[in-house]
Length: 82
Image (cartoon, rainbow, N blue to C red):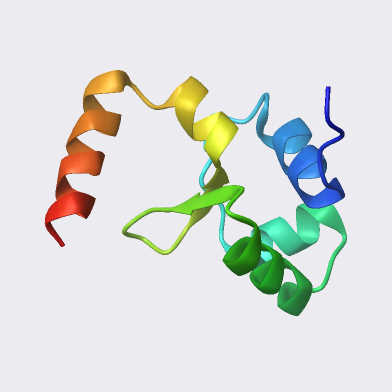
């Protein structure tokens, strides 16, 4: 298995028991111990995170596991149309 980048691993560990799995860049920075700039650059370039309409982020892995299928389907259609 490929080792997860530190930002992803720390984020997923932190939200695994948290009901709210969508976080702002500031919150992700605090969780991971990285600067906000580093988090923003990583999120933008990596493709490991997805963003919702409230400008919050979660990892693709957490999104797939915790978002109901119907919501993922609707989100895919909405994003395809935009």
